[in-house]
Image (cartoon, rainbow, N blue to C red; front, side, top):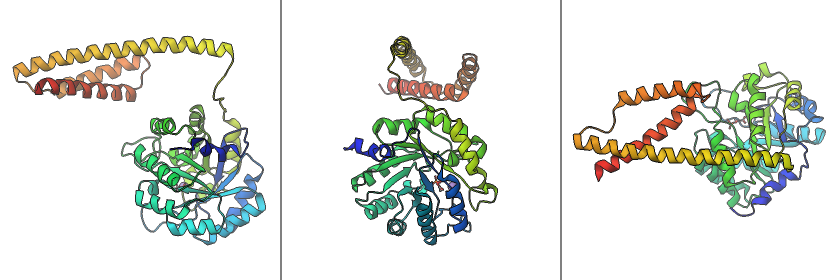
Amino acid sequence: MENKKEMRAWLEAFKLDHPLVIAGPCSAETEEQVLKIAHELKDSKVSVFRAGIWKPRTRPGGFEGVGEIGLKWLQKAKAETGMLMGTEVATAAHCKLALEHDIDVLWVGARTTANPFAVQEIADTLKGTDKIVLVKNPVNPDLALWLGGVERLHMAGIEKLGVIHRGFSTYQKTKYRNIPEWQIAIELQNKFPDLPLIIDPSHITGNRDMIFEVTQEALDLNYDGMIIETHIDPDNAWSDAAQQVTPDSLKQIIKDLTIRKTDDNTDEYSSKMSKLRANIDVLDANLLELLGKRMQVADEIGQVKKDANVAILQNNRWNEILGKMILEGEKKGLSEEFVLKMFKAIHQESIGHQEKIFNA
Ligand code: PEP
Ligand code: MN
């Protein structure tokens, strides 16, 4: 993708001394609710007011948004507060209406990013717009779908692009509503370093008590901004009640966040870092050396099994090793999740080596 620098230009045009803050209710409910929240957020660090006008619901029967009338409320909120206005678009009709009402920031929701036909329809309708368009990650942990969404919009001549990490759905029971996959967002950032990356702690946590910690984690990873659902009366919100915060708590959260520098050019920092990085480089080289040796042993085991006509996989032994390694790892400060992931990958590679021997 060319013109990467231009992707950041819209964010830099804000001339902010802090990460971008987008805030406002999950859904626009009434004109009064929209205006009240907007006025509460007016003299804060919030640059963009958000409110869902069309709400994608997993099951029918829930509140599906107020529709077009809500765009008029957003126009009014903009006229009264000067904040930019943002909403989610999912169809060509939504895009047309949002453009007609001069909405400044349009985002593609997680369910829509998962559907390339829908994203293409949005890209075709928004072709060449100078509005800011943000792409949420798809509901499923698929980096290519997320990238594809950005590429479709960019190919339609939209320059003011950004992405939102709102977590991924999973069958595992976790403390999150949608589990953050930091690594997927990092890979996306590696591909497009100039694409502004925004955290959505509201949909990640589903719980207002965890908004601060997830936002801080994102800032520690150098995110460019946050989108936080904020409601005048969160408990009685018409959608996503448990995750919304009040304007006052939002202001407190923003105050408490530690904003990190992207780098430090002092000699002291550089000399400390270069020593530590040299250390890490040696350790990484040792790790590779060891893994290579481990696979040589796997090859030998493969040969012995082949000669004895024994199957490659012995589940009992594998479960025994895994249990032992989790305990050993814990003693060394390694999380169970990491040890599991690492040994699954090692085991997979080892099986691949033995299969090669079997097929030789
Ligand atoms: C939202 O931002 O209100 C929303 C519906 O988010 P998501 O697409 O991330 O579920
Ligand atoms: Mn919501």
